[in-house]
Image (cartoon, rainbow, N blue to C red; front, top):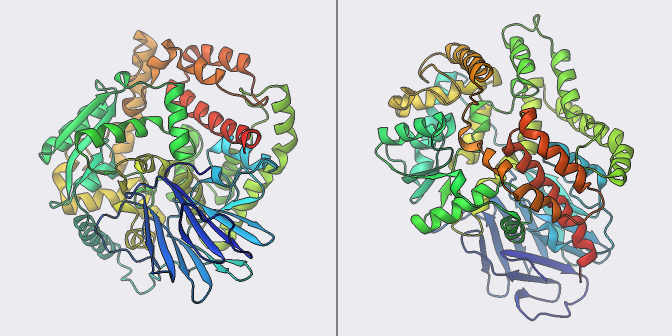
Length: 567
């Protein structure tokens, strides 16, 4: 049975036996869908001569070039030529899952549509996901199912069927003017053009750089903004001042008034095939009722802001120390940074949530999983002359597209999402600027200064200095803020208000034990998990991180349980 808002494309060397309910079928290819949302899946049949399909960003009446998808993935089938082609965009955040078997190939936007009872889990991929929130490259939770990557194409000769995998080249930026100021001006101009091409939208608003970037163009089609979190926090206070500056309606919801429980996670799992980022699911439904408009966010602004570089990895001390490399490689070497990154990627010896059986399993795969991560990083190093760019691309493909981009995608089951900052023209312009020039949002600051400098008159939530000040001054003010908060906490036990991520009230509710009790695999130790979580507040472990980890565990549990329940 297909999952809602999903499809399966079957390619076989024999005529499909059951064409009932198919939206396309011939002697080799069949397409079936289940409750597709038109804001997420676009399907066009070509009069029996094949079909074109796109899934991803909401397109409305925008022109859609299936051969060069933007913010999504396309499937094009030409019946006369007996060829089918899959094209993933430059971001690759809308994964197509595919299964290759003797005599057949299956494609779907949902991994759970392709899982079979006899499938062998890829335990190293699962261990990687539990540790870092992603699986490497084309790997999924199961050895016989793959996922697409950025810039990837799949070409299928239907009469075989035979499939070949390839990657197309990024846009050539060698002809661009090398002057950084000119590139930034081009970015600002092109970004304004792209944003103006969209219909009205609601901005998932924070006090950060990427939200300000989307808000900056004078003609931005942002009809309203939405912010959830601790409404008494510095984050939401600054966010309100920003939208007030540009006179936008702003809807606020305190996170304590949003019900998060195991039933909600089960609902999200059915809709999305995972239950990460439940707050974004709730928010998209609230926005749908309030405005009936798609959401947008700055989640994918990572390339512009340099968020994925080596200074963003490791603990706070490592981030500060490794940033000295940008002043002089003699202070901090490339080898030292690479060692730190490899250590950060290394799988821990134990998990706090595993049973004895789970511990033994993951102890047995730990070395192999770690080696796979290190080997993947080494491949990026070999493919890119600049090691900082290599690290950035590694993080972008894995952390950004597989984990962070799941936030706006939570709206694909309802009102859909827009992702203007991930347009390929903008990504390529961003990469034309050296990493050290993008680091710490230096380019974002210059873009906002060109488009709407008044938005720089307010500080970031994490800094005390106004955003128009130099990055150095802002980073120094960040250190000062941390010292003030820690001193205040030590003297008065006043914990800092965490804005978007303040889930601390969940520690006083039954939601965590409820989620744990819903798990079915013998990999987990429910008693141990409850004991550890009960101690988390005293150990300073925030409830947002705890919820995030339980959502990952529940997602893995869902897929392991799926095999035994597969009809």
